[in-house]
Structures are given as C-alpha cells and as structure tokens.
Length: 300
Image 1 (spheres, rainbow, N blue to C red):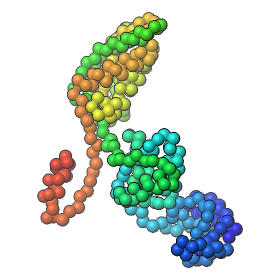
Image 2: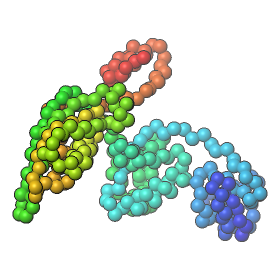
Image 3: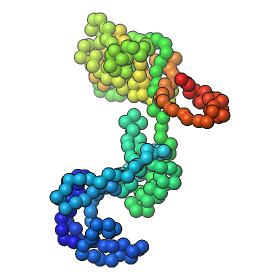
Image 4: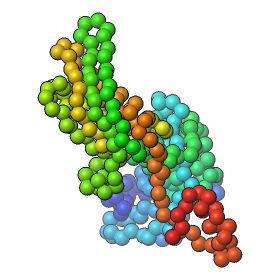
C-alpha cells in the first residue's frame, strides 16, 4: 500500500492508494499482498489481462484465449445528446471484457458491437441504459451492397432555376457505360470521369465541378441507395449562361443527370462475396449442399 506499481502493457505508473481482500461481498482493508493473494485495487485505469510489476521486470503474463465473436449487432444511441456517454460506455466495457469487440464499419458507417451471443450483447445494452442512462437502438448490421449498371445510356440534362437575382443555369450531355473488372483494376478507382468536350460551350473552369457532380451521384444508387461502382461517365457537350452559370449549378446538373440516367441503364445490386468453410458429417452432405445452393452459394 502506498507503493508505485508499473503496468507492463502500457508502461504507466500507478500509486496504490488502497488494497482490499474480497470475501464474497465483504471487503477487508489490507496493507500488503503476497504471491497468490486475490485482491482488489481502487482507482486503476487498465484493461483485462494487464500485468503489473514493481518496475524491476518487463515481463507480461500470457493472456487467456479469447475466442472470435459469434454474433454482431448494429448499435446507436436513441438521441444525439447521448453520444458522449455512449462512447464512454463502449470504451469501458471493451476494456473490462476482451470478448466484446466494437468497430465502425467503414462502408455503412454503423457502430457494430460483437460478442459471444445474444444474451452477452443484451447484458451490455442493458448496462448502458442502467449505468450511463443511454437508450440504445439495436438491429442487424446492414449488408454492404454496391450498385452498378449493365448497359450504356445517354443523358442530356438541363438545370435551370430562377428565384430573383442571379439564378442557376447549366446543361450537360454525354453518356454513361459499365466498366469491366479489368478496367477497374487497371484504373485503381471504382468509377471514371472522361471529358470529351470540344469548344467552349462549357467553360473549362466548370469541368472540375462536373466531375464533383459525378462523384456526388456515385454515393447513392437508384435501387437501394448504396454506393455505385463500375461506371464510366463521358461528358461530350453542354451549355452555359454568362450570368447564371456557376460551379454549383454544373455540379447539381451533372449529379441529377447521372442519377436519372442510371435508372435507364439496367441498374443492378452487387452482393458481397465471402468464403465459408463447412465441416459436416457425410450423412448430412445432401441437405447442406441443397441449403447452400438455395442461398446462391457457389460450392467448390
């Protein structure tokens, strides 16, 4: 008691202000603990499986085996004002329980909570409500679908808006077409913008705005609202106005043109592909094979 101990895992020094020996729900204050004693310490910021020493050794004890999570839920606070407490709760829970995992899906932007089963996750959702006053909305994580097109389609779009003073005016024409997987790999990007305009019907300073409009349209497809990939957009011509044309007008015009044209270019949904190994007794092979085929599984 009163000594400094070192957390071998992160190198932090901590002063032992209080040590107690636990007897069920009773605590006995003690001044020192020896090898083999099971004690509790107060006010220490650490994770489960951390090793402490007197500073003379830099050896960490091996941690217990932590299995991979078997179930995941998408979670978010019911109200925006609960976001801070929500983050604090997740940080604390993952420190104390190594079988609980939290990640933010880079594609769907959802917070995904993973654990060892439905009850395991329900306990932590209930603890958030009880200990941190955070109402949590939970559900199945979204599948990371993508969208693409299967046919070429032409566009000729006019964006015109007048609301007193200078308005908005932009016109673009061209076509969209699907890209092959080889072209996408060679390009290194999921979509491509090509400018094949001749003359100055569209002033050159508005070409970057047209490309930005194309990028805006790729964020949300026409079928299920997922990100779009595998599309080449070719700008061939257009028109502008000396007063009303602007960067924003051409950006909105291009985005609207592509969104509407994708609906006529045989849009389709791309599903994510995963590799799964299935081990089963031979007598169930027929039933399992039929079940996988029913779910569009490709058996190799």
